[in-house]
Amino acid sequence: SSDHQPYRTAYHFQPPQNWINDPNAPMRYKGLYHLFYQYNPKGAVWGNIVWAHSVSKDLVNWTPLDHAIYPSQQSDINGCWSGSATILPGGKPAILYTGIDPNNHQVQNLAIPKNFSDPLLLEWVKSPKNPLMAPTEANQINSSSFRDPTTAWQGKDGYWRVVIGSKVHRRGVAILYKSKNFVNWVQAEHPLHSAEGTGMWECPDFYPVLNKSPLTTGLDTSVNGDNVRHVLKVSLDDTKHDHYLIGTYDYTKDIFTPDTGFEDTQHVLRHDYGKYYASKTIFEDGKNRRVLFGWVNESSSVADDIKKGWSGIHTIPRTIWLHKSGKQLVQWPVVEIESLRVNPVHWPSKVVNGGEILQVTGVTATQADVEVSFEVNKIGKAEVLDHWEDPQILCGRKGAAVKGGLGPFGLLVFASGGLQEYTAVFFRIFRYQSKNLVLMCSDQSRSSLNKDNDKTTYGTFVDVDPLLEKLSLRTLIDHSIVESFEGEGRACITARVYPTIAINDKAQLYAFNNGTASVKITKLSAWSMKKAKIN
Ligand code: DQQ
Image (cartoon, rainbow, N blue to C red):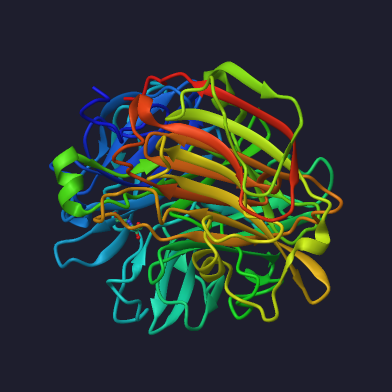
């Protein structure tokens, strides 16, 4: 019960117990969503990895099935690691995944459904030709850095292409392979892309996005041409963050050229500036959208994870598209999640004075969806930033408790009545080089009296003009996760928190303003969220 398990989520994807990490091969087949994930059947820490499998009609409620892929061949006898699905002509799914062979080398394998007429895709048959791609003397690929095949895409020449994550010394590499029949794969002469100093690239994802209206339209992974840009996402093993680059894919040369690369440290593009990793997207035919799945690990100690018997959850799937500026992506929780909303609370617009804290009553504060918009006009009160600073460090230095000029203002979630505990998600506006700079923070420093948790504060700048636009924030709250979307999805920050007092019916929700200038809430809508049926 929630009394014994106050941190178990009610509407985020997780198995009943044990360790879970990367989402694998999400797909829609015969009207059902399939989600596979890295899973340890034997405990709450990483190990013994198999592909667990669940299906859903709506991306909200999930039914568990038997494990789909588990060690059974030489080519995966020491583990079945991450991979992706490709829908082949005739609507037939195929999975490419990384196996760990008897020498602990990382190799790429193929599995296909045993019975294509089974909508549950219960049984998977592995190719007798596995491994289809392997490190050799000739290709000089590092056998401990060769993993996580992407969804494949087909060029105009009919060849399939797939990218595998790798590294050469400190250079992250997206190794490209090609195949006519999906079984015989040949390494291309050049990688799709690489970047010095970034370390191992895990879980690459490569896909097109539409660069004209309606921008929210998703594209099949093989589409290229006019009005199409490409996104390369890599999960950086060194920092455990998902970074993406927007650029051009030259499909005759098979080279991806980003508009701005990893060198530009002031414009780091991340799917999420909090805790979030190993994500991947799918194109959803029929709904014409691209949907992003991602993993969030715990911020609690391993001892606490073992005690509670589980570790890791997935975020709410997010629709993803190119922002009209062309400079970044936008993400928004899939609309289906709104079916869990009950008991709405709507505030009339109200001014929040400097130092004021207003409780949002009438919602279940541990299990809620909150949308709030702020209007600011006293821009003269903004603090001056005289040199550029990493936004996460700035958020750490100027947390919610540090009084400012224009901000901090936002929400206090998982707050205890006496504010001994709270997690603050907020904006703070600066004047920097005669422009207004909007900082977005998720401050976990006071989230729990338990000292064993990682309480790192996260932050990013959001590309919003505070004088022309409202500052909007949507936060999905679910027992131990706070998933926040700022600027209508231009910045996302996910945090894990484990309050000791602000749990169950002791948790409260507030809007706050700790600046000297007043701000106006133009809209606040909050809903309690029903429990989803998950596994
Ligand atoms: N997790 C998998 C690997 C991948 C890593 C192993 C990323 O395939 O590189 O569980 O979290």
